[in-house]
Structure formats: C-alpha cells, structure tokens
Image 1 (cartoon, rainbow, N blue to C red):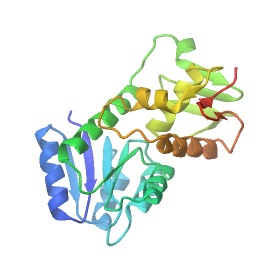
Image 2: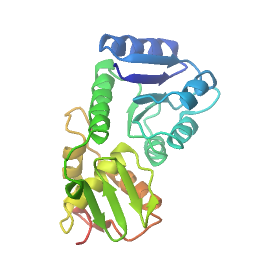
Image 3: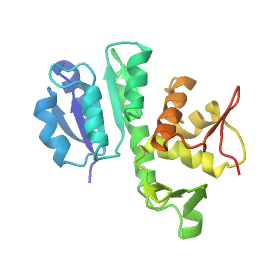
Length: 229
C-alpha cells in the first residue's frame, strides 16, 4: 500500500506542486489549504508523514504539530517562509523531525520525505529475532527496538522517530562520546541536509525534558553526547 502523506499549506500553488511531485512518486496525498479543514483527517487517520506550513490563517503549524504529537509519532516536516532560527527551534522542540524554508526545491522536499519515511519504516520493523538484543537498558531506561517502545522507570516515553534514533545510538554506544557530526551521519545520511549542530542540540533538549531532566544524557563539551556505562 502507498504511504499516506498529509499536506497542509494555505498557498494553493505550493500545496498543489507538492501534491504533484508526491503523486509522481506514488504516494497517497491528503491535501488541505487550511488547518480547520484538515482536523478531521488529523484526528482520524494514521498518516505515514505530515508536511505542515507554519503560517496558516486559522491554526498555525506549531499547534497542529502539538495536536499530532498527542496521538501519533509519524514524522513531521515543517514549512516556513521565515529563515529564522527561533521558528526552526520551536518546531523541533514541539516534536517536528525536520524543517525546510520557503522557497524550496520540490525535489529537495521529496528527498527529505523519503529519508524520513525510510527511518520511520525502520522503527516499525522488527530488527532482531532475539529479545535480548532488541532491548537496551540503562538506569531505569528500557528501549525495545522491535516494538519501538521506550520506558523510564516503567513509565512510557512518547518519542518521535528522530528522538528514538538519537537515544538508540547513544545507548548502543554507552560509555563512549558520540559527536554531533556522527549523529548527523547516522540519522541524516542524505547529502542535502544542512549539518547544523543546533538541530541535534534541540532534539537532545527535548529528550531530556521528556525524561524529566534525569541525568542520563551527558554533554561532553566540544565533542558531543554520552551515556555512561
């Protein structure tokens, strides 16, 4: 079955263009020009990915992102006409996985969508026949790679695909510092991605907030991040 992609953008030319490119890639597209028109689908359909414009006339993309994250963990890409760092950080903090600034090249957006979907599929596929190999643990933290579940002191953590992968990489490298550059290489292999370490910083901050600032992920200044053995 084709992946279901949600597009919400009040600029009809942009929404129609994205729809055209995605349909050419055989995706099933659900396109809306306003957030209110899209709410029923947002609340009732489990999409594979969402592309949300930030500047909408009724409900902004940040609020939509929050609503989606209350129920779903599929990837979210934010579209913004502003090239402001605060917009990017806000989107990532609220649970977005990526962002792209208008104007953009449609093929670049398609490439980012494909990259996010590859990771999302990976998280929802069993990666090991051994339960022992599929579970990573540390100081009350338990991550099941096969079921894509994570618990802290037996309480579930709702993680986005990007957050899950960052935490997985750090747990797999427990005892060793992992640089921001290495995290980028592991997460965004595509050359199109602008490697700004600030993006990783925001995801790490959000992970820490979800873990109630438990001292699990340590910052190694000038190097990256580490989970002690």
